Length: 187
Image 1 (cartoon, rainbow, N blue to C red):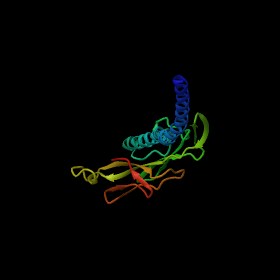
Image 2 (image 1 turned 180 degrees about the horizontal axis):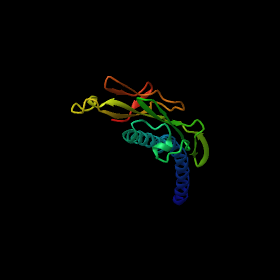
Image 3 (image 1 turned 180 degrees about the vertical axis):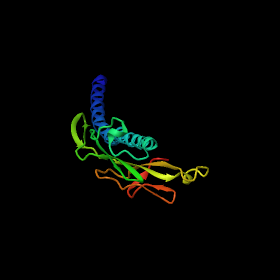
Image 4 (image 1 turned 120 degrees about the vertical axis):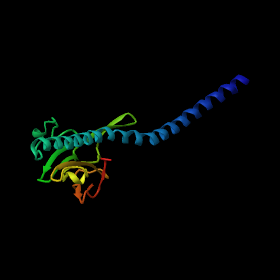
């Protein structure tokens, strides 16, 4: 009799454990899954951050050689495509500044797995803008020659996911600042 009650006890205990795991595992997954899915954005955003930063440096080098900014990607010689899976890249040059954009594509998707079932979801990524400005060298170096000019750069990221061009950064009275709705990543 002792062995029968022991078998019944083990059977009930096993059933309770299975029910417990059936509650615990999905609960744990529901807590962990959002943070795992959010991590998949970082490498995608890192691509745009690196490309726009490279475009800034290339514009500074181009200015040193040509005394003007490049208005297209071929002149920069970076090999960056204007359209990638998640971002569109563009350049806007003026006489005093150049802006490089990494804007999230509205049709960017990724595959996410919910309980091992794949589904396509729209990717919500932050966009980037880089700015390179021509400034009097004395504004960045007190020992510089009076008529010398230099370039300074800034890299900005939108505060929230965006599929539109971010506001342009500015240079006023010796101060670089990101445009409205963006934050400075240069520091």
